[in-house]
Image (cartoon, rainbow, N blue to C red; front, side, top):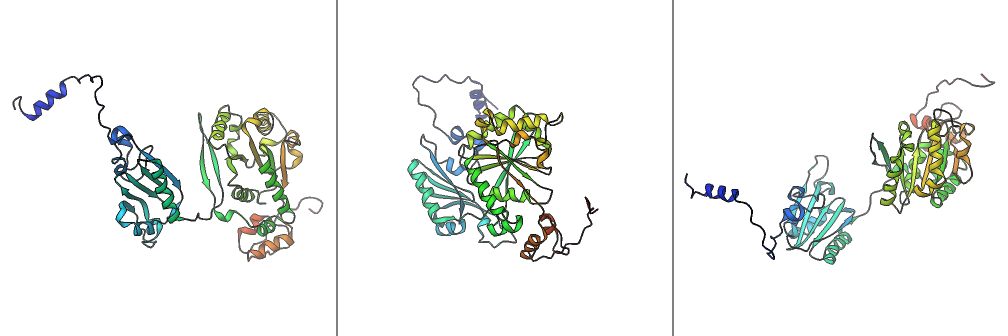
Amino acid sequence: MNASTPVNRLADEASRPAEEPRYGAEPPAPTVSTMFGSNEASPFSTTYRCPPIPIAAAFVGPKFHQCRSKGRWDLTRAAAENAALLMRSSRVLWPDKPTNDNGNWDDVIFQYGPQAFLHVEQGMVTGYSLFPSEAEKLVVDFAAKYQLPEEPSGGSFELIRTSEHDISTESVPLKSTTVLEDEALSLHYGGGFLEWHQQYVDRLLQRDSGISILEGPPGTGKTSYLRHLMGILKDTHRFYFVPPGTMSVLSRPEFIGFWAVQRRRYAERKFAVILEDSDDAIMTRGQDNSEHVSALLNLSDGMLASFLQLQLICTINCGTADIDQALLRPGRLISQRVFSRLEYPAALRLAKSLGRTLPVARDYSLAEIFAEPDLEEVGRPKIGFAA
């Protein structure tokens, strides 16, 4: 093979040093790789900072604008009515679903012009254009015609996860059935509860910080009530759940930094932190829990509370007499409620509403009423003078 062969010429060119760019020379034409990064693009779904490849390829000039909106979309109808504009689509056929079900569509891309696109997923629609107003119009017009109503849902909470050097969260959605109607709320918790609940919600809406204590034996519905609370306050509050085994996070130095970041991101929300089974953290201070109690005091009142603005909701099984009295001080305490076992008349009304029977005339916990359609008497040791 001689020096004139294409391979040798390419090798010679590759070995030459790159020429210095001339002053005032035209810059190289932009490409998809230089604009977005070729390793970030995807044939369909939008990736970090980069639209799908066929859309990115259309915008190699200096102008590029996008507009997004979240929601649910009738992609089956949109694809049928805009078949001539359908550029790309991705579907999954599930054996147990009809082929026209909206869930079959993963991604759809419509092209309205050389540089006018609409990328639609089930949770997001994104318009792309040379002009911001046109990108917005593509999204607004599509949403007006094909947006579906939101599915009923409950609230959600952020599960706080800890590691040696990091504090993070994972969002946990709740079903719509966790939100109870007023009548059901009264049946579950007895007379006078609905009035207290309404007053408590008003206080949570008014206060920025403070502590709430929900007291009662296991099975009396404290956790169920909190799920209900998350649902009715989902538009005003952001709930965080600290697992019982990780209470020490409250006194970690990086905990303050974590909340500072959360506060910047969700400045329009009130923050409620749930500490379930937190008996050890709020009982009268001793050598084994002094750090936890001090952390709660600092977070619920004082200078730190003014900065973090946290509403602390503690569920406990111990009695009020065991609680550190500093936590019950007026101004720090938002509310305190005892969740009791239902006396037989109230338990019977709830059981009948559920189509269940109670075999023995005694008090019941919610857990016992919901456990089985027909309850069997379980022998419990008697305590006190009747023993």
